[in-house]
Length: 111
Length: 250
Image (cartoon, rainbow over all chains, first blue to last red; front, side, top):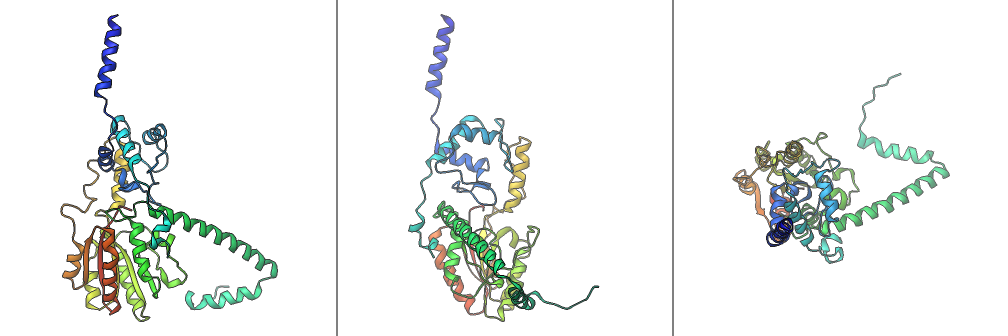
């Protein structure tokens, strides 16, 4: 019985204190952890350094797995450097990015 | 037998091309035409993909390198232009290069500090043809020999330098970040000796101090096109000009 009470209290505390992912903080972390250096400040990517990450990022589980154990040139971001909650904020930032204008609406891309 | 012959690629290539054409059989001509059609289709597909990529971050501040390249292209494409430094990225994907003098290549070893003096040398060579020399000038690169600005002004060498100013020796930032993360150190110290901030460098003031027309720092994409236009007017009169653009890292 006592064990159940403790468990229930722990779950309630989790529900009370768990914060939903914060895209504004995610943008700050995207800069602080240097993600922007290869993927650019709007996560738009660059051909020579790193792909576009958003809007519409890959599923969160794949995103997390890749950040922790990347392949190629990307360095690993272990949990010692970036916490799970921080990754969730960064993911929320990527999800929050707006779709860009269409090519047909940008005269400089139609010259 | 070795025969020493003084030769020049630019002079030789047209004659060599004609000689090769004379030896072509009908079969080979068909094979070349088929291959050409495939390459043209692949090229068109790549251009369309690049255009879509360029839309991401189009209005961003700092300014995207795609936006910088296309604002510049919009104002030079109908002139006799020559890209004398930079531009390995977006120009090669979205500009139309169809003359050998339109790109002088790069240092060959990703060397930093080559761009500014190399572009000035190429602009000097282009001057006698009345050709417009444009450079996408990296900020870290210009720190090695900023005196080229004075040389350009002193000798009246027409050169438009549009700066890709990401306020860093950015290649180094990425290398250090990579190693720091592999050692699980975080990247708090990656900016030491690799970034060009605190204070930010005002390249327009540096250039004006050496007698070069200059504008910037430009942070908003909407201000870039007009600044390039004003700089081009100066260059068309036979003098150098610089537009300092604060950009995305790459």
